[in-house]
Image 1: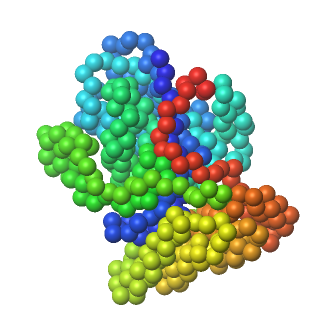
Image 2: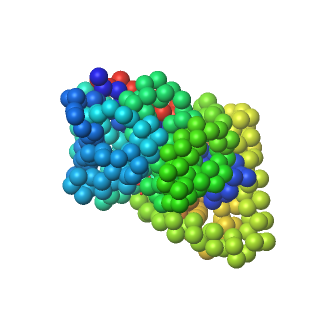
Image 3: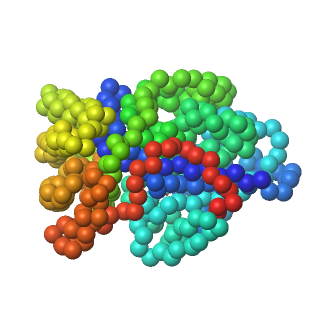
Length: 411
Ligand SMILES: Nc1ncnc2c1ncn2[C@@H]1O[C@H](COP(=O)(O)OP(=O)(O)OP(=O)(O)O)[C@@H](O)[C@H]1O
Ligand SMILES: C[C@@](O)(CCOP(=O)(O)O)CC(=O)O
């Protein structure tokens, strides 16, 4: 019998760059754009065999015959997908299944994750998805965290098959998915995207990177102990903050695509180089921005629709911090075009304010607006496209749930 799960995409509304350091809070909103996986055991095989299909993308098929639980599997046609290989490796190394199995996993992603250009809509039983005319690594991403969603949902599907019931243990899912995602990325990132894919909207403060580093270090230096270190790490408490949250009632999040695109790793390395070179200057900027981020979190919690001013000024304060970081580090986090667009959006009736989410750059803007003013904002920007930098509003909203069980019959 098939089982289906979905995991949300994310927007980092506050905490870009600071979130890399476990001393700062970040505010992560989970989105209605979700990644889906349907797992179906097929014929009883005398083998260990897994086929993963992502039919929305050209060449979206990866087939594995598992010969060992102690190394990443190789795709039989040489069609690599580092994120899938990492999930299979870490899940199977953790679970160590003893019997044979034959599994089909189907992946679907909601429209928000990728550009919608050159797509056709396909209606499945109850859900519909966009089909692209290119391979997954050739289609432009929008920054919602497709790989984190993929890793979270495939981890959940596999755990539900091999250890039925344990897919309800979100900490277990998170720890496995986080290790797999870092393995595929070849670096230990802040992990807020994987955490949001599992837990949903959260106030997040990262885990100590040493927790994962120890697993990879053992893999390299003491292979015999790898599975026991992996097991104890997956089952331990990582002691990181992931407090559930959601935007106040009556407030909508909009994501505006400006079809620019940025290279996050380049922005991050520029900021980190500046932080190293200018420790005093950067610590003042970081402290101001941290103050602004925490004020934003407090103002969301205390939100009163009769008085937008405190939340408006918290957003202004974040922008000031990011503008300062832009100027001092030289990384285009809130570049002038984004400043202009955000300033203009803010003048529209009912708009509380907007920021460049995550690492910023030319990717997208996030805007908080009163529910009743959404249509006005859309009409205003639509009727004067050039003035509003040709922004297009992605069809999404906050959906604060993390991983959920779906009805497999809907696909
Ligand atoms: N629907 C999917 N099916 C199969 N593989 C996918 C899918 N979505 C993402 N992936 C895998 O994740 C990779 C993209 O991950 P990458 O980390 O580069 O982007 P990302 O940072 O998650 O994206 P975003 O910009 O949305 O945050 C793809 O090349 C592919 O290997
Ligand atoms: C700059 C950084 O703090 C956020 C990047 O966020 P996003 O992938 O642009 O949403 C880096 C990170 O935490 O991975």
